[in-house]
Image (cartoon, rainbow, N blue to C red; front, side):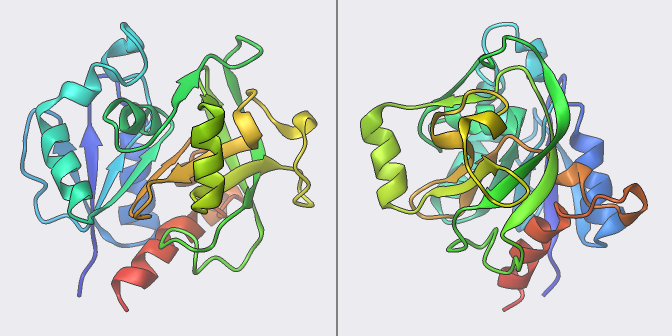
Length: 231
């Protein structure tokens, strides 16, 4: 079986080529761009909603992109068990589309943050993480609206269902307010849906796949997906 990644391109996406380069050139999987006005997923096994500023974030992050024609296909694909990963703005789009619970607010500092962070792999009970041997990954973030918020009931449900996949942490996997870059509830950096086939995360794994940059922890997520599909 060959694995194909479909990278959706919205007006304002700026990490689509990063996702394509990571999956196609570095990890050597089949990968193809999917234009937002199309509805054909072109046989993709995994859909990536990339980071950027879809539609300029003019209304609300991800709010307009959620209504792009291709999103009907992505939602149907996800509801049928298809694998979807939303990164940064892609995470925001997944929330707007109702595929994941909660919202993303302005960073508590109100400033755009771009730096490397550490995230603890909080759950390895997902196709995105069950092949990852490390407990902590070093992955960059680049966002102004990454402050994950949900009601106490939703947060409890996420914890009870083991849906919290990544939390901001120290390099030693300690979780505290000091290492939380944006104010996210429970230090949340990434979550899945109940069926664990849809992942939303603020850090950019596609920017941490190339060994020449001395950052390759993000590749573990894409390889974990592939390992599960090839079983």
